[in-house]
Amino acid sequence: MVRGRTPTAGKPLTVDGLTAVLVRKRVKNVTLRVYPPDGRVEVSAPMRMPERDVVAALVSRRAWIERHRRRVAAVPRPEPPACADGETLCVLGQRRTLRFVTRRAGRRPDAVDTAPPLFVPVAAGADRAARLRALREALRGVAKREFAAEVAAWSPRLGVPTPEVHVRRMTSRWGTCHVDAGKVFLNLALVTRPRRDLEYVVVHELAHLLVPDHSPRFWALVARHLPGWRQARSALHAAPLWADPLWGPSAELDEVEEAR
Image (tube, rainbow, N blue to C red; front, side, top):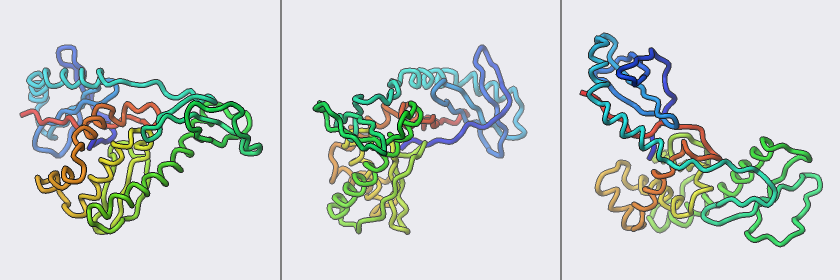
């Protein structure tokens, strides 16, 4: 899963044309992070470490930094939806036609749709920003229904009680499992991904009800119930949350390496 946090303000540090943000912390080692979408570099260093040692760490890890900057730059960034009536959007792997209908009139489209319509109630004369908010809210309704159904279908297959399902817009995780409370939290952004991605996250989180860690036993359990889990995980990594045009904003990639 992707792990993230908001970059911390610090001192700009330029070394051989590379600018990084130096943040002093109560840590033992120097840690480098590359942030999307622009490849910004942050270096965390011990409070009393001489700056020349920080510079040396940046120089020694320059190849690592540039490799991950290239990876960030290579991630496709689809255009955000125009929120126009008749536009199509992929919802759980199914192409849906967006139909923005005024709340008062509640009209239905006159033309025959080429894809199943997703009706989005909006106020008369709503601009794009208002339509985008309404679209997200409509998708939230779809997510609550479909995510709960997916969890209910997979729980007996794994032999676990069906947990409470909560849908949240998260910036750094696709899902979380609160084992003691019997709750599963799923990222709202999964609603615009293929259903196999949702299935993988659901199976992943339900498996934690049986195995709380990511040991070989855990992955064997996931593989037993979902043989194609690797493809789904790769798809989620290839289209990270920070690059999602509908759900953003940016989240830190999980490429974190200590420079020694």
